[in-house]
Length: 152
Image 1 (cartoon, one colour):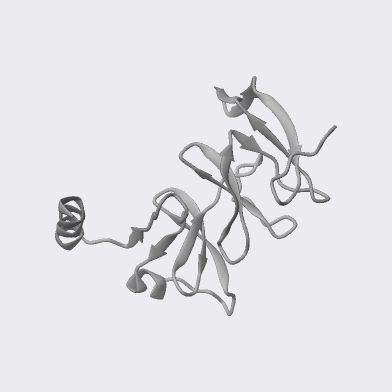
Image 2: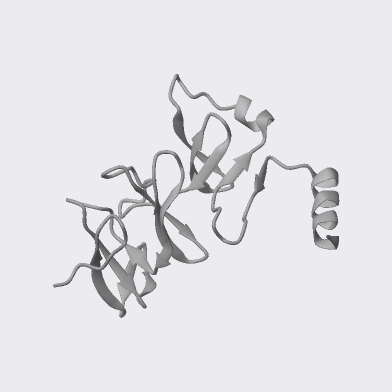
């Protein structure tokens, strides 16, 4: 209770453009302030990409927003086979166009789905080399869209 009161005081005194909701680690979305939403132009679309505090988000008209990772070319991840990737607490997961988590962020790395399969890595580490990020170590597996491992 005391923690919530302190957060509320902080928001009152310093303002906020978004509020993060996280209930039992099952809600990964942000909910944006209506004032901020009015500054966005949805161009008759239900979902847009916008950069907030140097991070890209998919945003719905109702203010729900989901953080999206950058792809291998440094651009915000696009939906492939109806899913896009997010990175939360250092782990990658997948969400749908409703901005609902479909596969929770468990993976140290995951490629986008192709023909219903994603290559995922558990235990790999990102290594920065000049302008490139490389992956080292870990165990690579393949999963289906439900997150089940595919036997090789």
